[in-house]
Image 1 (cartoon, rainbow, N blue to C red):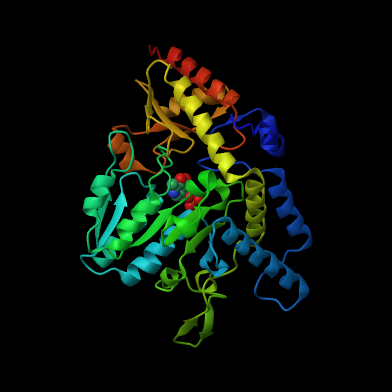
Image 2: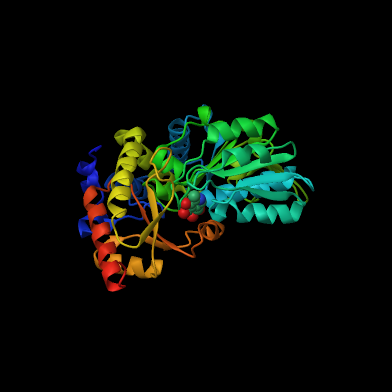
Length: 404
Ligand code: PLP
């Protein structure tokens, strides 16, 4: 087992004794992130790209240093390809409305999958309605993996954009994005990856991923809420219109018209999340100091242990690929005759925090034939103790509900 237990002391919230198994919803924050934000707010804060005074210039340097740090972390050679947003949802809406409305014509095809989070589905439904483009979905195999055979069949000329999750927040499934990108590019389509789960748990290297856009959120990768990233290949960003207008995104404005600032600033209207950028920078430093390969291995090992121990719990059904290869640290489950919210409530009595509900993936719930699941998700600070507490809590729930 990749032993990361020593770093639990960096996460003040874990002192409460909670078995925190909901990092896929939002991760906990280590002290270096909290301290970096606090220090910056106390000593160096001002608005950015607006002041001629030294404090503002220094804040601008810190904000742009965060952009360079993100670029370096995801393997982007050009920091201008990194756009700061409010989070994955905003990043994906930016592509849907900024790229989709601008480039899609009636009859063009948008190809997505049945396992998408609503953030990578609903914007495309809205854009399909506005443009007359046709929305199509790739199904899953019986083993909850993306059906690459059907994906290949659906990847025909006329597909203009492929919107795919880099890692399912319900199943943990990690599709082969490089292969999907090659197929998409062969028919002239752009590829946008919802990497809200992929970046925090496996990391990405955009120089080999093959996609054109990558969206992710800081709060799921040890950083603060309120900031996220849209990375775009420069020529793809150039095909995009700004989704929001306002301060600092213009080159010139007259009473009737405006021209845009260079990329990325044209996509960052208004005061950006400044303190949050400093926090994201510190979060990336922390993740890098541990190593994304170790974090992924740790998540996978915990997933293997969880799948094995949970398979003995009476009445429990596990949803997701049977093996752990190309699978992240997420385990979704249902228990016969028991609602997922009841499971979560009983688990909470034993200080085990899991998410329950449809996980913003209602179409996927329908595919799985359930209305809700309980979901345990693992991150670098989790240990086998957390899994034991989960298993004990589920056994207790089974006894309470008379499941055998
Ligand atoms: N996509 C996936 C796969 C997610 O898991 C989430 C959050 O749970 C999102 C998108 C939306 O992220 P945010 O709420 O940070 O915008």
